[in-house]
Image (cartoon, rainbow, N blue to C red; front, side, top):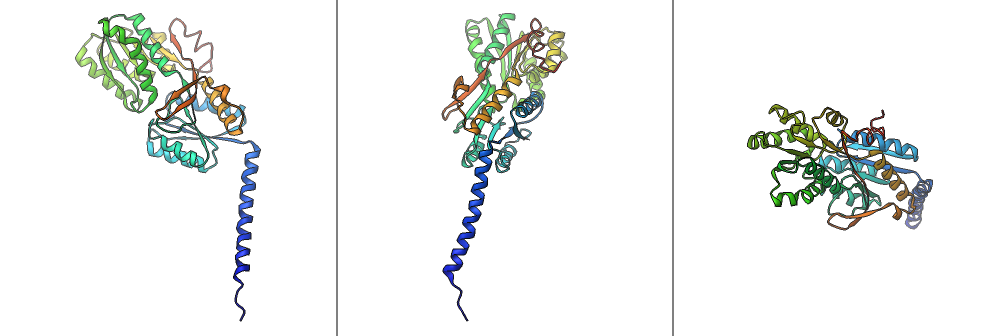
Amino acid sequence: MNKPRVPALFALACFCLLSGLGFYFSTARAQTASGQVVVGVCFDFLRERWARDERALSSEAAKQSVKLMVKSAESNDDMQIAQARELVNSGANILLVIPHNLKRAGEIVKFAHAKNVKVIAYDRIIRDCDLDFYLSFDNQKVGELQAGYALGKAPSGNYVLLGGSPNDNNAIMVHAGWMKVLGPAVKSGRIKIAYDQYTPDWKKENARANMETALKTLGSEVSVVIAGNDNLAEGAIQALVTKGLGGGKVIVIGQDAELEALKRIKAGSQAMTIYKPIPRLAQAAIDLAAKAVRGEKINQLFNKTVNNGFKDVPSILLEPVVVDKANIDKTVGRDEFYGH
């Protein structure tokens, strides 16, 4: 009986393995050479303004022949991390992440980099990690614009500050903008910050509860409410109405130019919002993603760097715009923000 020739069998196995690897790598090279850009988008949630971001990103991706794969984590950290992994494993060659938690999302960056996938933080920065790019509006400037408007309308009195989620760096930067502008007025005694709280998960009901707590102490002695976004402003207004302080008796300021907020501004129950032209943000995001994946020059796209606690992240920061009753038609209306 002849013994099997081990060297010959080993050689055959090696040939099969190398042939398979050769096919894999040739396929991978062909995919790269094709120039297809597949962007995995990890939303925190798709409520409120984020539904408009999704539509704007999809529209811009179609214009640039970019494929989008979209996931929404419904404000669940573990789900968002799992979804990011799924997107990378399903073929995304760059990620666009709207983090729920500014620190835990660093796990997404670490995993993506292990797979040679770059990460763009979209409108919310990811902290303490080797983040590739950041794209947003100047969020400290947002806070400065809100606070400056408030002082112009109410140079004295009690101020209530309802910040966004404490896990969102945008909320922290907006708050920093508030304090930069309001600080001197507080120091001089012209105004008093009578209540100052962040709002977990940006939920309207939490903002309403905070406003109700403030009113228990202040009664009707409230001059201004500055809210982290229009959703929180709505919660504050609901609480004010129950105390007979609606209809513009208190200056209420928000952010995001939500449709309902624009209606409130026209009706007089909300004084101002901050307009952040989302189609421009989406265009910049898809343009950056496409160029980065295709290996094109991108340095000229950045106008700032933002430190995320680990590094200075190359950033694109767009300018926010104040919108009130006087200019609503010349800003949001002119840009046909809601398609009319």
